[in-house]
Image (cartoon, rainbow, N blue to C red; front, side):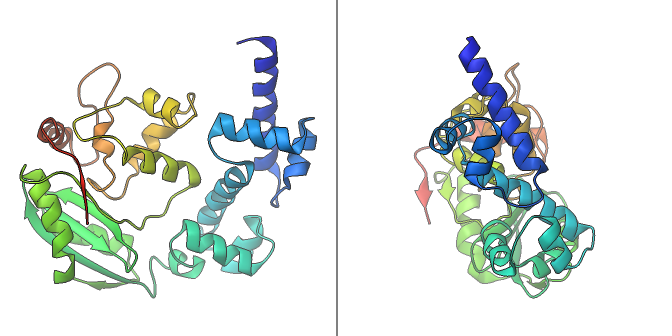
Length: 283
């Protein structure tokens, strides 16, 4: 890396720290001035380096603050200002985009939300699929239907949970057929909470062809953040919709299948299934 590139990288790191330290949403001009760059040039190089805009980066920081405040039990008004929102309207616009629900509902573990779910047998054991009116919010794999149900109830303790919803059967059947080797991997709609970075990783994972694998470093480079391999690994580990977002297609650079939230044995079987998998279908 030459001297100019090193200096620019230092400025971008300084800009990120400045955004993180600001209690309120900083303007593009403010951050650009802080690192002695023109706003237009700063916007260009920031997005080229991080694959998201300075505004999206600031939103991700505020998203993290908001979640922490709400999880700590703070009231919404306090969480609003502590997270750096200047108005309630901006907060609710932001929450709808990133939380998938209002702050009150998120804080209350889904209070006021209707979540339908179904638990079925699959080639990989018991499969739980739950969905909001926007899409699939949870897919879990296990060996105990009761335990899967208990985990769902804990995660969405205050939501209205509707069990054995037959309207979800087309989605579960698509996954069963895929796991049985009868049909290709289905592209299904999902409704999950995510930071800007998680969303970028998960969306990219969905573009990986069935039968193809990448390691964490390759994913980081592919999304334009070559130094973010560990963050990519965390995004994969926190994927709430197994199979729907195919995090199983990411394997260690050193070889083997690596870890998997639903067991390495399941991951190994998934990868073997996909070695002869045709192109995906969309429901």
